[in-house]
Length: 74
Image (spheres, rainbow, N blue to C red):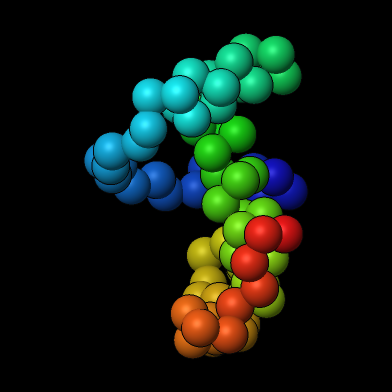
């Protein structure tokens, strides 16, 4: 992160498949990075996949496409 000021963070809760979470945790350990950092990276990558430019502290530049026109499967 280029800014020296810390970004505000918000806590949220969700349910995830056990096997997916297990592999995700292993990845964070292998990368020697906090799981939160890896999750944020994955979320940014998903926004990029759907053509949404993430701008920290601002709103997205592009609006998401309707679900039936999104690219699936990477």
